[in-house]
Length: 439
Image (tube, rainbow, N blue to C red; front, top):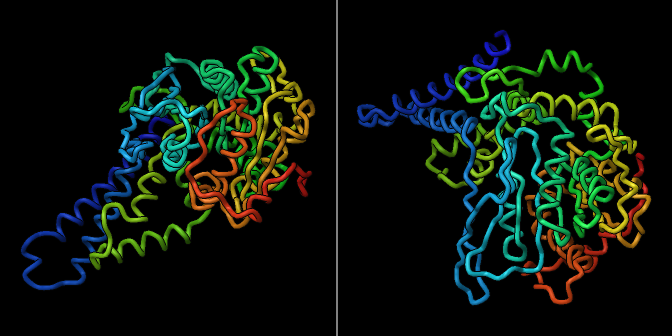
């Protein structure tokens, strides 16, 4: 009950702040106050509007809101979303462009389970849809999963990926973003031994902690500074009576959000202060840059406690993936068994979550893969978000990834990407793997 009480207390604090924002907006918008101009009331209304919106978004799963894709004849083709595999802790979604034939590029986007919904990859999906048939792993909020569904740790996560890849078949190109990169690599190695005919053609790892110690960050330092017992006492709570997962132990999304914000506290403070100013000056609008980013950033989900704890212990503390000693269901997974899947790593030079060196470490583990099937790319000036959803992704990384897919697709005729190709000098940054400086 102690953990349920703290979980419900956080929800009460969030709900109270949402109510305060709504009350301030309602009071400051009272018609009588408009008889005489009062800047104080305008600022109070602006604070209330921003506050209510921010705290309301924390418990709502965002919609995908995928716009139509322009067809070959210039017509708008609607995009439908349907689950092709439904499981207790996550579904495999397919994004179908109506009226369009298959493109020849079947892409599986492995979304992170790190506190945000899969919709965090919305812009990534939108950028790939004109040229690819896109599938996405849609992880469920642990607070909504009954205790009767059982546990879900990193071994279960890996087996989910194995099932998804096996279902999609060997003509799949997998792109893992951030947190799932090491487990996607392990899932591919698992298939290499258990079902080699189901291995994907390519695997692109974007900003993932394959070897967290290759270059330490605040995330890795925190993982090493606390014991597992301390982590469980500080971070793990039980879902309260309000949700279907009552009694399930979770790492609450609100705690994860607090951690995210604390890492760049000044940046977020300035962003909200500036937004309140813009609202008060009538310069903000529903779909401005601030709302577009924070509507997604503030929408958080709970993670199963066993998944969070096993990730910290086995991926960060014990470095089982980096040391190639990861086990699934009692059997060791040998990454060196991958011999046919082309692998590319992508890193950002200013990534403060998975620093350069952590992801490229995967290439050293692929001892059975020829160098001709290995590639790496370091995007200069890009942070963690930018390498999969920002300008760096759209203008440079995405075309390079599509080139990598085409080069290893095994299909004689392929639809060419519609995106503008980067200049030759920029494309030469994607090169054969080199040993990380910190490795």
